[in-house]
Image 1 (spheres, rainbow, N blue to C red):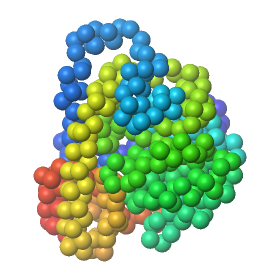
Image 2: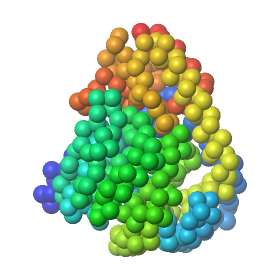
Image 3: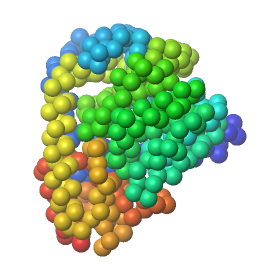
Length: 345
Ligand code: PMP
């Protein structure tokens, strides 16, 4: 293999056990199934049509998204999960390097390595917030998850605008995978700033992680760049069933909003419970909480919970090895989690 790839440190996805039944709170999926309209959309005819290639332009899905988000089709890019867009962005805009926080989504550094992009890794402040000043005038690709992962802490729209405004000679990618759980989306700012690439996903608030559907909203020039890369790699990257289920999901936005409200409410309950058990819980605007206890190490808690049938996410990494990231599930799942934690403590 090409030397460059042989030495790559690849991304490690969260565990996806296919055998034992766990309460799965480790990869920030929605605990709620896709909308009923999704089930109705997957008809026998659609299955039979799988013999045909899918629409490379995803016209129906794009039209539905344009309607809901209030944009034109040429301002929307659709991808096979938002990871695809992150990949394309490092490929397209990383020539002068990329700046991102030290504690953030682990795939950024993998894409940087994959495309030979020089990384400037900017430490979070001691309270795990992003130091906005450090992200100004970078002269290179800037990548920020907002809310950040795995901390769950969000920047305000005003702070995001400051960063975008102070980097007008380079692309600023705001990864909004978790924005629907209480953050403020910057998508409207793309009408004002040509350098802003706002990235979203159907994997979290829209219950379609397994369908693999991501999107970007941006100025038409940035969208055209992404399309060029897509058409140079895999034009049929959104399969038929995903286009159909994605379109049906968009048509039932009320269901998504209602699930988000439920998750926010459950998040508050879990936060209060964990604090009363002595945990430190970072202020989350995402569908997970990032927590640590002085009574038990992060790794031990992860292992003990796993042995009791509850999967959470542990990162054996400097600055955060005391923590675990816990996805917000249903109320019932979270009650079990809290009981198991009480038993362990
Ligand atoms: N961004 C962040 C911050 C994430 O946590 C994830 C989920 N692992 C993604 C992007 C990618 O999500 P997907 O490819 O499922 O859209």
